[in-house]
Image 1: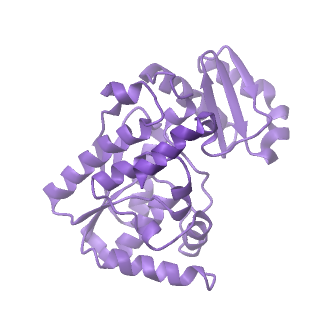
Image 2: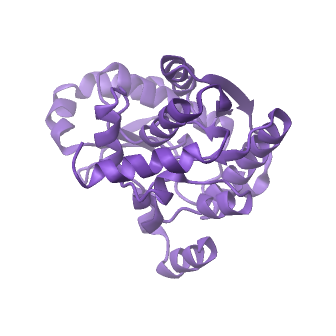
Length: 280
């Protein structure tokens, strides 16, 4: 572990150790896996991993959460969330993540109180603070703590620590809920989510990892890491067949490649500025 990262790791352990007990909002991503691992290391059985179960996350991610929690040795709970029944969420405006996280955190806080856990923790890291993330406001509203932020840990440092601790998520590509595949203003439905999920499953079966299938009505726009572009061209027939079988009529490859939060670029600057003021 690098000299700059090790003190932050020790600070993370100290922060969580002082909590006495915690419920971790667990998505099986790089960040929340590190939070869960450290929480289990310092709190033992006084930690619970809880994953929101809904159509906005593919089933394989749910299975991954259960498997990773078992590897760490932490108890794991699935909590049904109903964000799709909220018309404010389903309308898919720029505050969609606020309504999603409000639904999730309200359920997790209730579970934590019922089972006697002192805190609810999430996997927000220091790099997340510079992006358009309305969910941060929901975390504040529900008194959810972000120990990675409190320790000042960046994504790169989280990956470094995860590798040192032997977590297989250390190089896992970033993953966001399936609703992030839609342009703001394009209503979210179960049918659309399932369509995207099938298309992304087809891509994973072909060996692709860091990518997104963006939904544009009958068109699937695939964003890939630059190093995967040539491979995608070599496998264009297989990709085309798999994605069309998922329900799309046309398949395109975005030459700009994959960028996290890509669709946030379409938001007007004043919308982003207003959102950040609300988050702060």
